[in-house]
Length: 159
Image 1 (spheres, rainbow, N blue to C red):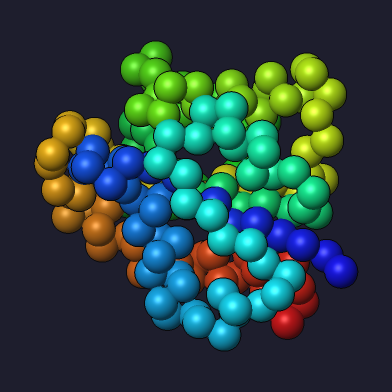
Image 2: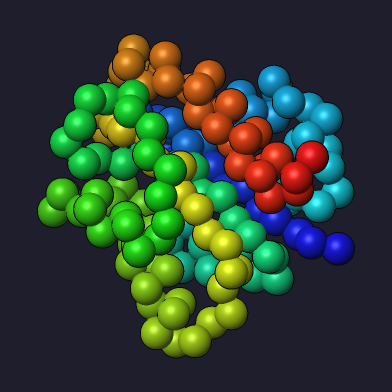
């Protein structure tokens, strides 16, 4: 049986950094039948760093949902492959310590068995300030992000 993991990444108390977590939570709420599919595992990772490698073990595919900064309008949604996320490196570093790109790169260099299919749903963020609420633009994008999660799962499963 194919197994896929959906990973919401972020810190709930850092403004837009919570976007990945909230998008996955909203998807689970809006699409409960899909979320209950036994081929799926759903994870939340507050500060994944190298823990992300373990979350990706023994699955055929992964969808990572995380806040990103590339300089475009807040709330913009990006669906990219891991090799494309270097474009989100703004030099500011990740709120998670090791970022997704660095972690996946290290896993490849150390020859860890990663899923064949890894996709990142990046939610363009503007504010990562501790204790701040999510920006309105990012909050408004969460419904579309949840729909994109559902679309990716349908693509995987051909439901």
